[in-house]
Length: 255
Ligand code: SAH
Image 1 (cartoon, rainbow, N blue to C red):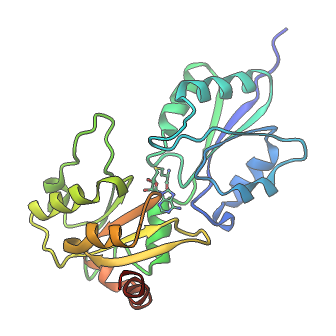
Image 2 (tube, rainbow, N blue to C red):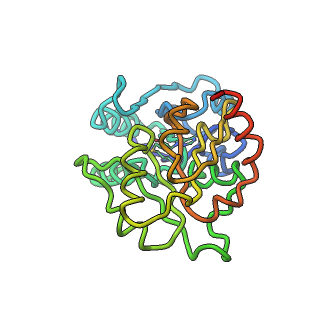
């Protein structure tokens, strides 16, 4: 006889600090017998596991050793069919550049029960850590979350993005900072447009660089900024509260 299928919680763990987990996420984590965890998730999350929980790392960083998506999908389905409660845990929010939609579709097509729990996305948390109010109404009418990394390796439509006049929060952009800078400059944004990089937001080794669009790629390279980091471009970045401290640190490093 078939076992009653379990269910899958698709949980956004937020970036870095485990205190950014929602209460709902913590409750769902505590119900699950199996965890499938992405590698941007803070390992301290393990404190919320039931005793005996099977915790499986299924990281997939661009370019590095990775677990194929199809394998992760099959694992989730297999455990749920065995009647287990599965927690699929992703960094940030599972539905923002996290392939959450693809995993939900896969599970639903197989008649499995899946429920999504939002997490705080790294763009929001990173901006706040830097003191940047993403939609301050004196400066902009909105914010655009965009990935610099398209599946077909094409460039984002920088002209269209610049034309929105919204604050841009760019994910997965650290390996192509020069082309982001060039694209946005060519789209008419001035070299003086404030820009920031927030690396490892909300983790103990978080770093923030506040600069301008014209200096973005060079300063980030000098400071050794790397993935995972979000890039924020827009007038609101002028309000960043970390500016002085970071500039001093950068001068010390770059001198
Ligand atoms: N679902 C995630 C995004 C996954 S895509 C979210 O909502 O945050 C991976 C990208 O997210 C990275 O390339 C980087 O741009 C960003 N990112 C993830 N964790 C981060 C962190 N702690 N600090 C800054 N950026 C982060």
